[in-house]
Amino acid sequence: MEAKARFIGGFFLLLLGSWVLHSFLALLIWAVVLAITTWPIYQRLLASNEVHGKVTWGALLLTLLIGALILVPLGYGLSRLLDEAQSLGQVLAEAQQVGIPPPAWLETIPMIGQWAKDSWIKALGDPVVANESLHWLGTGGAITYTKNFASQLLHRFFGFLLTLLMLFFVYQHGTGLSRYVLESNRKLFGETGVRYAIHASAAVRATVNGLVLVGLGEGLLLGAGYAFAGLSHPAMLGALTGVFAMIPFAAKLIFGACALVLVAEGHIAAGSSLFVFGVVIVLLADNYVRPRLIGGAVKLPFIWTLLGIFGGLENFGLLGLFLGPTLMAVLISIWRDWVADMDKSTRHAESIALQKTTDTAQLPNSSATEFDDGQ
Image (cartoon, rainbow, N blue to C red; front, side):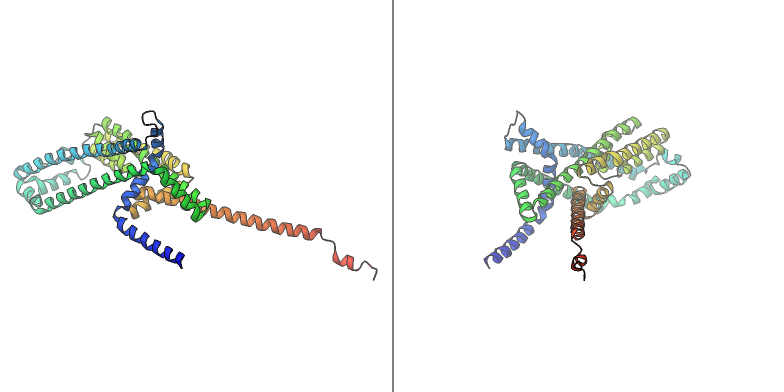
């Protein structure tokens, strides 16, 4: 009765604790994913002469470094976005006075160039028509969108700061936490559970390496391609490409759009070269480099990795980029163990049957012994 009461009480406490923390579970998972991915770097930092075992200072230093690596590019991008928004506001203010003339490259579009130019003039070329088309800017719609964007941005910023705080404590107590997790798995599932936990952490690290590092590599190479093609703000375009490249085959949206802009402006050779260069980079990264980094580390076929990424994105959002392949890796590991156990059981049964057959063949012939007395 006492054991049942402890079990029921513990179960209800677990539900209560999950309800209290449900708004922060995603942030906690992000912190754990970051900690698992960067744990080898953290161990090397603790072993260095500068830190040399000072856990708190090592955790603080690496947490601040990760925060800077993420916040600095985002801050630069937001500053550029604000500058472009101010320029756009000036253009729209002038457009309400004199209209918006069609760009020169619009007429050069094959087959539909003249139609596109005439449609532009009808919609935005005349000041009165442009004023009516842009009238929604004077209503509360644009202000509402801006307030919602600012609110979401502030919410994400504080969420990221909270994730960094959790990451600091995960670094600080990571050794004890990992030991508790492994011991809990050993008590619940035996040594097999310990192996699955280690396999899951390896899958998380391999997925992050395969998605983030390959995506950043694609962003750097294509950023150089944007610069050579003569596009403005190649660094921003490269960073945006790197973010999209974390999703397999999604980088084509960015460099494809940039190539179309170059072709529309009359730079056909530059646009075609950029498109071919981008296709080659994406094909090499997504079909050779990424499968080796993700699937090679955890012996997971790339098709299951790809399905795990897309399924995780659909069900868990951005966090599913890492959770999806991890779940697939653990499921494939369980399936392989089940098949191996089935093979062992089959071989064991065949061995027993063969042994019985051999023992039967070695027994003396009972009928010959029974009638050996000459009857």
